[in-house]
Image (cartoon, rainbow, N blue to C red; front, side, top):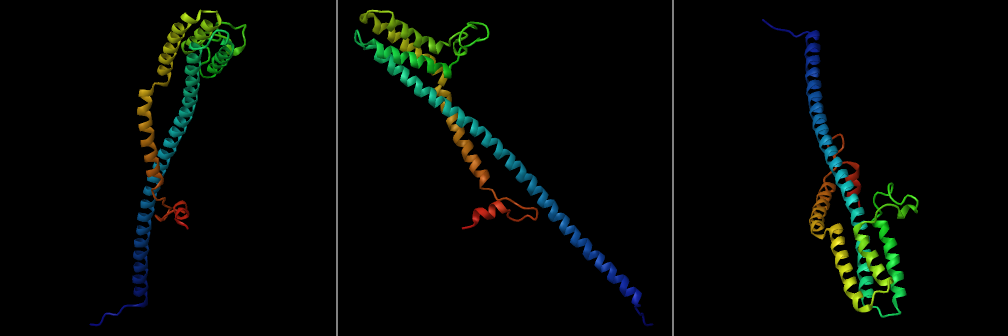
Length: 216
């Protein structure tokens, strides 16, 4: 008995074959899209972490810049007090001028506290209570300006200098900052590792930013 396949049967099988092929293509495309979505989510997470690290580093950079300025001011204070301790009679005026300027500059870094409660009739920078780190410098100025005999002046100013060094060390805290520097270096290294990661596009290929980086 001979079995014949009609034109309708061939069309049906062809349609089934086309449907199967379409399903396979759709499944492959869906799998590729899912992989691309996973890669994009991972890339978004990495970019978010990179932005976070960059923000932290920018804050720390600003903080380092601020404390560098404080350190330079503190060095000038130490030199000025040391100079005052060895000044000759009749030559105090230039050193007093220097100390006065350093006191006012110090107010930029150590503004008075409780300015809304004390000295409200004064200029804004001079309202409130002076911080201890500036008290040392003001005491040095007072000792030099009130006519303290030279024989006694050196000991008084030495006490002022030692107290100032102790106060400024509490502010700068070099021991803690050594640990911060080590942490900053590690953060920079991590940021560089994140920047080195390839950027993927929606089809799982290397993205535009990576391609531009590889262009000569």
